[in-house]
Image (cartoon, rainbow, N blue to C red):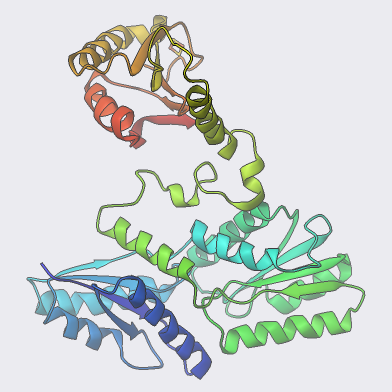
Length: 391
Ligand code: FES
C-alpha cells in the first residue's frame, strides 16, 4: 500500500516566507528520503491543495494531509475538509487522513527556549515575556496560543506574561505595548509565535523595535519565528503518527512535563525528578553489586487496596487474579503484588498503584488485569482510561 504525505501551508505572496517553507520541506524530505512527499498551499500561491491531492490520489492509496498550521484556525477546519469532500467522492478507493494542526508540542517549545537561552541580557526574574500571534477569528486558535504562551513562560521561569495579536482579534500588539510602557518592566522579551519569517514577522519586529526606541529605559530582545528547524519535523511526525493511530506515546506525553524536559519545569519535585529517582534507584542497585541480595530486585511493585470500599467492588478478586496471572507467566519475582489498607481514594476504587512509575489507577476492573500485565508491567504502556493520577 503506497503512502504519501501532503504538507499544506497557508500560502504567501511574500518571497521570503515561501522560500523558508520550501527550505523546510527540503529538510523534512532529507530526514525521510524513502517517503513520498508533496506540498500544497491553501491560497495565494500555487500549487493549490485540491490539485495536489488529486494528483497524489492517482498514485498513492493512503494520503496523509498535514495542515502546517501552528493553531487550529478556520482554514484548517473548513478549507481542507471541503477539498476532501470532493476527493473522497471522486477517489472512493483512496484513504485520506488529516492530522491535527501542530498545536502545543514540546519540540516547538524547546526550539524557542533554545533561542531564548542565547539572549545574553534576558533575566527571567525581571523581564516580561511578550508572545505575539497572528490572530484568528476562531477562539479555539486564539485560546490555544494562551496555553502555549503559558507553557513557554513557565518553562523559561518567567513570571510576567503578556500576549498580543498582529491582526484580526484582540488584544492588538500595539495596545499591549502601550500597556507595557505604563507598567515599566525592566525588560521585554518578544516571541513572535509564527512558523516562518515574512511580512507578519517583519511587521511585528518593527513594532517592537519602535517601542524599544521610544522607551530606552526598557531593555528588550526578540527571537525569530520557528523557521527551518528539525523541531518542526518532529512535531509533524508526531501529528502524522497520531492520525494514523500509532502515536509515539499512549498518553499525550510530548506535552507532559513529567516526560519531556521543559526548561525550568524539570526542577519541580514530582516532575522529571521522580523519573530520575527511578533511574538512580536502579543504578544504585547495579553499582552496589556484587553484593548479594537474598532475592533478585523486583521491577515493579503493585499495590492493591483491599480495604472495605475497594473490596466491596472486587479488589480481592483482582489481587488474586493478578497474582495468579503473574505466577502463570513466571513473572511473580519481577512484579510484587501487595494488598494494602485504604489508599485514601474511597469511592473511586478499586484503587491500584504501580511503583516506581507512580501510576495510580481508579475503578480498576478484573478484566483490566491481563492488560495491566501485558501492557503496563511488560511494555510500560499505561491503561490511559483508568489513570487516576501520575505522581
Ligand atoms: S478503600 Fe480503597 S481507597 Fe479507600
